[in-house]
Structures are given as structure tokens and as C-alpha cells.
Length: 545
Image (cartoon, rainbow, N blue to C red):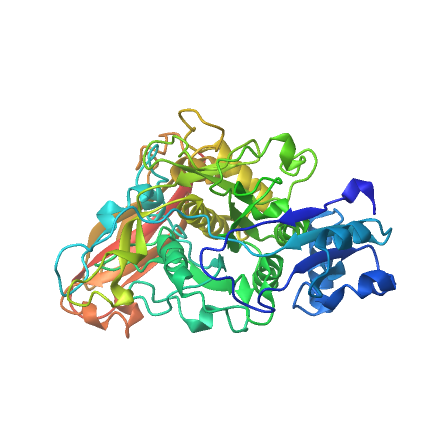
């Protein structure tokens, strides 16, 4: 075995509910070969009940991802096709088998993987909210969306073209979701990428539902509003009946389905660094690291929970696997803070590899049922919680910020940001961490980040009366927002017009009822049908100030 790439790892994990799936109770070992797995000696082969590719994608797809990533980054990516999943025969000595495999010159890496868990803390209380027939509007409890420094400034971003994450798909990797929740219209059974039957982890549905609610909760008059509500959502189960637990495969499936600029969110943590119960990022394991590296090299932003182990990722026990000078997957690792404080919450893992943090307590979202309909208490579709927590709640806040940045980048430049550049921008422009207890990075500040990347940005909304024969124009001036200086050079990006008045109901079938035209640094609003109306119009501008 090449000593420079040695990654002999044991993976001892809690399961928060019975560990179900393929080969229940069997022992899986992940093996990465230098070239051809058929070169195993008979002594090793006899230990295996079966051996198959770790990844369910065809080899041509894996090779295509590697080739595209190599071309984009001009660096050599790992061969995912060289990873295999071996199931040991009953009674086989695990340590002896791993020692034998590690001694072989054709084996680069050996990992013993048994399962994983979710990086969340359980809600702190239960019992339901007020008696009601319908669902109340809980958006006022979503403080994490508010202005910096306590929030991430999502509400500011929503005023910008692309500021809701539109056009970007977020892939949530974990166990289960409620596909019928009243406030998650984008989430349904067709959102599942794998096409495989998932293991029946009913106890985990609330977790996935809560994560998705943070990101894409419907923007309506009840429940919660997602931080990037315009984004699309897809889900990839990390454990299936066919493949058992396999986080690396889930990441590869998402990467193969995604387009550059999309987001992969890894909502799993593991006991790592040889210390039982000290939970940290999944990329500690080489198979997951290789899959993440392939994703980011293909232009996909990967956001991953730092884990709830209060683990120092810079400790010697972690073998330098979180030292950027040794290896860097390109993922955004997310720590957790006490809500509204930017102080590390006691359970969050930490270290120099952690890039940014999000709220790790008191996150209002869908699921769990702390707030439930007392008339229909068992109706999960109307369940909400004000206390979703852990690096599980922190990570979707950051994933949403990344989706918004990518959407606005496409609006402004025609292309998404490189994952490494996006990661650096979030960290460099965030609200600095406060307090002690270990480094978890800053809290993202979308307003600061976007203005520094794209110049000052502001949406103007002005009602303009329009009659039968004349058009009204409005010159966009810099300084319309405190983010813009008076010396800014303004660029008009887009404009939309919505008619109001007696004939406004016709606007959906008669687009010409109200029109806008961009000319230089001014926008003309005109009407070409019917009697006089009032047009409320939006214009999106940016400047170099």
C-alpha cells in the first residue's frame, strides 16, 4: 500500500434508529484499488461474501465526471471507478482482513464503514402551538434571515434579481423527507434522484423536512419562508435498500444530475479521528472526500456540516485530513453558533478547516411538530418547530446563501461562481465570529458579499401613472440605497412592469397592457391597451460604487 495515500479508517457510528438497508447486520469495507480489483489474492477474496463498485453510476459516467473536472481545474482528480464495496463473510476477522488488504501494493485505501447519523439536536420542547384551523405565519420567528450581524441578510437579497436562488437546484443528502408537507410544494416523490427504494427511516423524515423548509419553504401567508425559496430542491437518500449506507454514492449521483452552480448539501456527520462519538465532517473518509472533490471540480458547490462532536479538526488524531495544505476538497464546512450571537454553540466541531457558520439553535422551520394543529395533531403536513438546531440547522442556512450567490452571479455575469471563489467570498465578507470555544468562521452576510462582488445593487419600485397616449420615464440615479455612493456608475440590468387598475386582471393574457423599455440609463413605462391605469414597475440596477 502506498504510504503517502494510506487511509486505513474505522468508522464507528451511532444510528439514531435501527440501521436498516442492504445486507442488514453485515460488515462493509470500502476499498480503493490502484488499477484492477481482480488482482486480489485468494486469501482476501475468500473473506468476501461479495464485492461490487462503490458507485451505482456506470463507469462511463464516473469517467466523464473525472474528465470534466480535470479540464475545469487543470488538476488530477481521483478515479471513483476504482472504489469497491466488499461485504465480509460471517465470522471473518475485520482487523486481520483490513491489515491484509493494506499490505497489498495494489490497494490505496481501506475503510470500514457501518453507518452514520444526522448532525442535529432534538427540539427542546413539544406540545404544540395555539389552537387553530389553519397554520399561522411563523416568518417573524425566522431571525436567521434578517439583517447582519445577527442574520444573513437574506431579506435584502430577495429584493435583487436572482436573490431568491431561482434557477439553482439544491441537493439534500440524508435519509428521509415528508413529501406532503403543506409548506413544501416543491418537495415530492419525484424530487428523489437515486430512483432506488429508500430504507424506511420514518424517524428521520422530520430532519429532512426541517432542512428543506429552511431552504425552500413556500413564500406564502402561512408557515415559514425558505431562505432561498426560489431555488429548486432535489433529495438523494444516503441509504437505500439496494446499496445500504453509502454517502459517497449519494454525492456522485447528485453530481451527475447537477449543473455547474448547483448546490449539494451533506446533512450527515460521523464519529471520526479515531474517537468514538466525536462527530465531524464526512469528508474525513477518503471515499467521501474523493466524491466531494469530483463535485467541486465540476462546478458544484458542496456544503457540509462540521458535525456536533465539539471536535477540534486540527487535532493530531485527525491525521491532517482537515489541513488545507495537505488536502482540500473545495467544500464549504459549516459550524454552528448560538442563535443571534455568533458565539460557537457548545457541541459544534471546529477548527481552521471550518469556513463559515450558521444558527445552530432556535431555527424556525417545517417538521417535528412542536407547533402543530391541535385540531389535527397527527397531521404531519402541518407540523413546524421553532427549535431546529445543530450543524444540521446551520448548514442549510449557508447552502441557501450559496444558492442566492450563484443565481445572482448568473443574472449579472451569465455564469455561476467557481466553488472555491464562492467559498472565499462568503468567509471574507461575513460577520466575524464572537466569543471563544474554537473557530467556526464568520456568519455569512449576503448584502456585504454581493455588494463587494457585483457593486452596489438596489431594486427601485415607483408607481408611475400611464395614460392612453404618453409614456412615463424615470431616470435611475445612484445613491438610491445606502449601499450605493453618489459617484457610482449605474447599469440597468432588467425591468418588469405590473399593471394596476380596472384592467389589471387582463395582464396575464395581454402582456402589452403594461410594458417597460430599457434605454441607456432610463426605463420607459408605457401602456398600449384600454383606459388609463397605474403601473407599478421594478428596475434592477447595479453600480461600481
